[in-house]
Length: 479
Image (tube, rainbow, N blue to C red; front, side):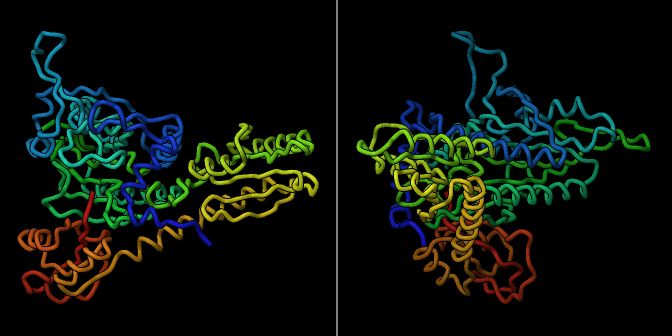
């Protein structure tokens, strides 16, 4: 049993743009392209996601910090590859009023060049390691591609970035694995299916030795990167002179990693679960978990109904649930429409018959299934329904994504699959950059990279050059 998603799949872009505005997530009419206004309901969802992020990363020893948004030009210029990767996307601050600055400043596109000069001051001894810090801050990038609300913006207003420093490459590698595990826990709680890929060298993060992209597949068949995990080894430690004194009195450069996510987590959640009625929010992050709607009739005893509404509200609040009572004078149907548009997980309907029978009607948002539940069992019943809903949302989303990943035997077949079904298409590849670029040119897709961790699989020949293949590589059209 489920709700139609015909609009979502037939015209995802139109559906997505409509639902994020109509449901009160954002307002995209701000007069700077690629920047948007977070409305109260949308911001409450983002804050709930951030709460989960903070809880999970702090379990692994990360601590939160807050660095300035402005970065001096000379610090930004210290890492050549990083400059090349971000130079064209930087917003420069050049004046105070009419007076030119002696030293140009930039709005952070990401915070390596803000944080690492300070790491060089903070890290002195092996006793200071590992250093595991994170922040959630706005970053600014002048995106030249077509901007899309929440998906691709010029201001990422809720950018999570963790920056770690370690005494050895092995410890840095262990941090990468820990980050993947953290991502798994987050996505399980948010009901977001994901796949990890080790990005090809030509698409790794600027300054990284290698990058792991965390990807999901949206309803239009395009892949959205929702996270990035990067091993820098000593690529930043050397230009920023981040060293530590070893136990035997020597000095070594640290080994570094980063892990980043943004509000794309929310974009993917909206896209993967929403339906033709609107948002479908996992209960854990819904600003309102339960909406109670009294069904009132002029010729019926409204006082009894409102008494039962208040009783139900108190029961649910006592259990720590987030509850809203919709007492507006609109018709019940209008209230149902609004609750479904906003993705409220559970709706309780209470009318004269329900009062007489000592029950409420419980409606779960993902299926719109209606179940009569005794008032004296309401809290347990609602909790179980929310648990069932979360489990079903997670399983349904994983099935949908897995069905859109398939391996094909040749280049022509890859082109057909990408055109007709979208999603991720996997082919055999010799590993050369030349053949990698040929794959992108011939298919019109991007090379996502190697599935991570890479699984042993029988290999034959590269679909481009026909030489012995070394890997299975994933292709997809991306945002």
